[in-house]
Image (cartoon, rainbow, N blue to C red; front, side, top):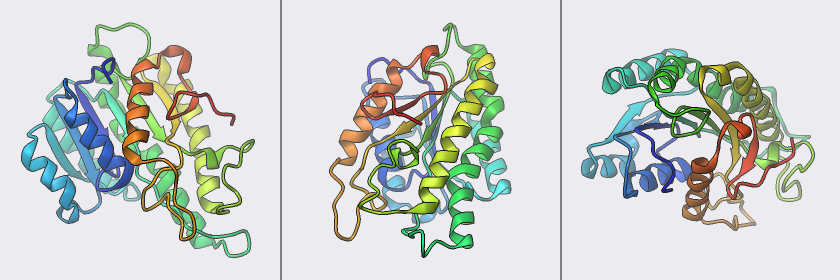
Length: 257
């Protein structure tokens, strides 16, 4: 992660899985960010995150429910108060859920909940933190676009690729697939809308990772979470304006929509 020189990073869904590992590796870097904001719905119940905060003064735990607009607005205000005019350099929209439904068992309620979390949530969070991202971009001496300047990273999935339809034989997860396909379109729209403000937008597939979400009852995911996160952080350090609006995996490979 040597090339990722970021002063401030916010990670949603930081209490477990990929989000928690992102926070751990960012804090453990030889040149860690001045501020790492780890958000989750219930900070009091996020024991591992609390343990990290006890040893790292640059980690700030923030309550944020991506499906609740007042919670998002309150989180943005709290982060702004910490940053004191320096802006937010990197927003990682990682929070997400999956419902293990099939075409026959999918319900309107689950479709709405998963879409609200996985697609509308990143939209609303990005809107709320956009002024801070713009502030970071304006204050950066760097030209072009990069994650070290100002960026939105949406944690997507190859399950949302219409061409690949990754891992259909393992689980249909209809609402999850649809929400990630929509998130990919949101990423493309953000790239078009925010690129002129100096903000890079990308969608990243972390791989099939060994987390509570990634593992299935009958099949264990093949990719350790620390390996996935290490790979993603390296990829983020290499992105530039040519990657604005791209859909890439944890190894940097461009994926089909």
